Length: 271
Image (cartoon, rainbow, N blue to C red; front, side):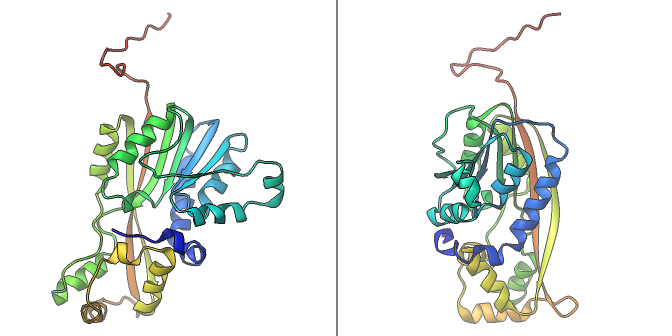
């Protein structure tokens, strides 16, 4: 799986309609939490919509914008108001792989990750790393693609016998199991379907190219096969629907039940 987020930094914002919508819905879910984190991180931050939302919500928290693509981090800096930069109140930029974060254990109060996890072949190492860097009582909030993403294209591939090369995504039950395996407590998962529509395949393909994910999302087919698939893509009200199953997750880092060497932790509470 190959993404090209570095090259896509300049064109990302014009095509990031879905990411902005899922980010807005993630923010609404934060309305139901009562947290006052000292440090917050947007992991897989792209051009920084998420970290700007977190700065608005938690103005006293230290903000971290983390991404593997350096051009995305430069875009975050460019979109940070000059006065914030001069006052050194802009987000701290961290170039890192989500599976090996250069952060101390227990250093974050909130981890936010919007539409990044599904590009990993296995999200579990990332969940373990999120758990490591969160403080006890810290919150993980994320959105990721579910298995019914682009079901219309999958149906078109099946109809013409082209083979389904669209990337497969885990369902929310598997993600919930991964969260528990990573050590999180009380995971809450829900799903919403968001459908974008296009007049033709060309703007759909352009969006995925501008986001830097076209090949990673759609896989490899011959051009002849793609022509057959796109011809079989069923229209609704004259337009081509592209559905994205969005899995939203919340989970908390609970106090450990045992030490790293396996000894049980027993807590005594005064009466």
